Length: 344
Image (tube, rainbow, N blue to C red; front, side):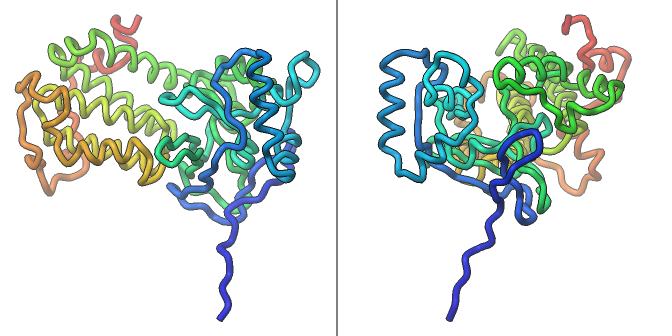
């Protein structure tokens, strides 16, 4: 009886104009875990170049096996002509941050080979529970397609992205999104800027805003979700937007809609980080008892039970119910667009 290893999902190859990169060797379905990798070297994120840091890096590199050390030393170093040590230059060029909850960055033999694209097809993330860096397919990736991640924190307009990538990583991005004709790029830029302005409007006035003008806040999130969906599937901001909507509903006693929004957020985080990601585990636990959320009970103006969800509605009517959409008046149209006076 013979057994065979599963076909590898990727290979490391030379990519024109980029050096080495990861190329899919078969179709990778959306939500697939492509990598779950431990760091071979780790440092404090944004650490200053000190003798102590250099000694720590040297010790970690010397402790690597010959194969891992060779892989580390073969990585690109955009600081080779500066006074910094070669080891630190490699780390500054290639290290991936662990995430918001852990102020560290690390070198990963395979994940650090993944190139950037502003319309990336894979999502990077640090799983603090498993102590591994994960890469998940944001959408179906075809065989022969390069696997890409997004190097920056926030997807800004093209000019801002290009400036930050040149400043921090020393290259000019030529991905599909950055290569759009000017007129199409301006349309995308307007949507990206509107999403960021909506973020400000949603958080404006904090809890007072959620309780005093909840419908307006929900309108802002509704508009944000529509924009995310227009730009492409599974943006990392989409689950967060759904959770923002859930918190607005929870604070005002609407557990029925809150449940739906949290479920949508969990589905998004599952695609981006897997069933065992900390976000998925945390919010699945919340779904089991929404009343335990710290915001529940602040207001009962929208009070519903968790199971008061209508059934049999057509999609348009379902969305109207979920987002509490009314027939738009001149004033509500103005409120739902960031071009309103509040966004300035």
